[in-house]
Image (tube, rainbow, N blue to C red):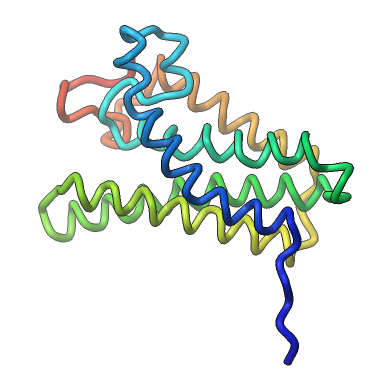
Length: 181
């Protein structure tokens, strides 16, 4: 059986794993570094809730995929339908896996560790990029417009719930005892 080689866009998706991890880690501190400016809170966590920490995956992932698409779409003939489906899958799967792993280990073992949290963040970025790549390579896509609409809706929810979060445990900051900004 002949090995299938990755195309340049596919390699780019995988190279995104350390980018998402490193940039997401920097984003963790942006809100505090900014003097807690609400505008910065749109792209970085405003508190220590699990929901707010999902921004660490959302924004860097969108940036990674979108910048490459804009810069290289014509050169490599990237199919927008497949590319934005891959991006959507990457976002949703990384965020859900981060939340699931976090709640599993904290609830199953009754403990919390910064090192485990960091590992989960890295694992979630790996899962997201790999599943996004899989859908880019092997799916028929959902349609570029539909995928972009869903990505936009996810972003709108993040913005809205930064300022008006539901009073659910997912949105609660245990450190400061509050919801949202």
